[in-house]
Length: 293
Image (cartoon, rainbow, N blue to C red; front, side, top):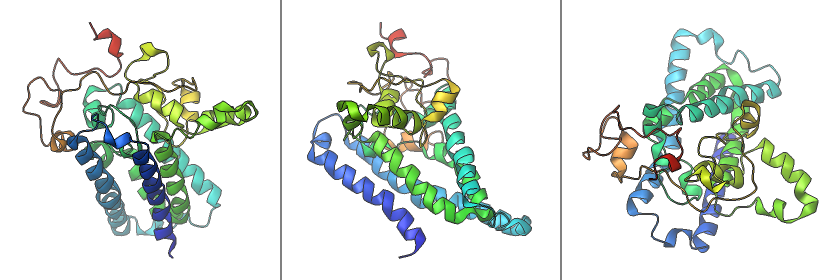
């Protein structure tokens, strides 16, 4: 089995196993997830790994081989640990800032909005974002450049680790509960929850409102590493899980509007996806409580 196939097989296996476990637990049998939600999730599962990421990489390789061919594999000989550090900084940390921007900039929020309007968690939430959100994501572009420079083997190791952590952070299995239940594991839990994203910290990010003292909709932005939230002051750790998820602006748009905005816009004038910018746009940096009157 080639390294590339093995690298893709690991997160795919985790996705299937976690999805089956969630389904057996009844997650997908309630009425919170609509057919529209399933459409968004299944299409997103295909577009990012099959079209967007490979498309960006192919474009970078084409530009690189056409204009910067002298740098092809130029950094392949340096230590693989420097390769991993490069991906951690230029992919994962950059994604932290990209994610954080999408919660402060109203236009960016519209591209990230599909990820938050769903009212329950689960591995299918992981890739819910507008196509343009991923197409413009700096971390993917930087990763393509690093691979062109000769860091491809490190990427085959780094990427599945990152994807598995992100899938686990969205999973309704809430695997981190084990570390909170037993006192002997608390020191390990302290290190773990400050290093990588866990269900407790990431569910808090998806929580509807901070007034429950658990949710943290405008923080806990980390993807692979939660340590960025610790360093940059956006972390909240409670070892609890919100009971309500979503975003206050829940006007339902068809899947093609949510994923293809701004190329396709909502016909509903009340919707924030009706125009690129309007005075009534949802401000994601303001907590739900301010609007719930």
